[in-house]
Image (cartoon, rainbow, N blue to C red; front, side):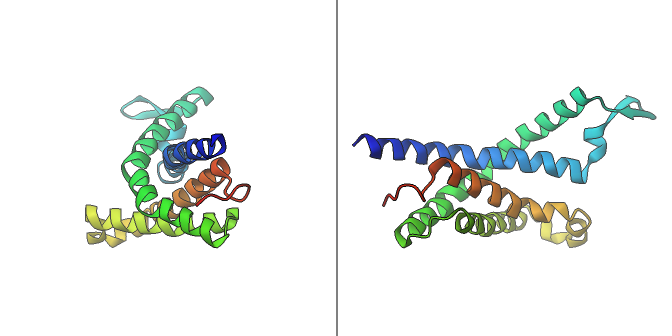
Length: 163
């Protein structure tokens, strides 16, 4: 009985933790790729900038991480409940509990979530804008990969099988 309780706690923690942390890391990486001036520079006045100190860079990345964690809550948790947990259950039943398998499913779920988000927000109306900010197109798959990897590391379905 205690083992089942521990598995349930791991499952709940992984479900809540993985999407938010993965989105936070993705947002910080995305900020460095798309808008490095917001991360690596500080405005002195309206016409002058200086390089950011390490502390200022860290503060910027933490800020982008919080924004990403919020997006992980808004987009990642529903994706985890709708697609991630059923995929986990199916993979465990099929005995496909390796980290690579989970990561590939995460990339697929992240990509689908990103496409649904772009469709819902009308981003397809300006496809050249999306292509100009090409790292945005990687945000969903990378976040899905990280979330699935974190889920797998926390839950470790390869060590114990549940149904």
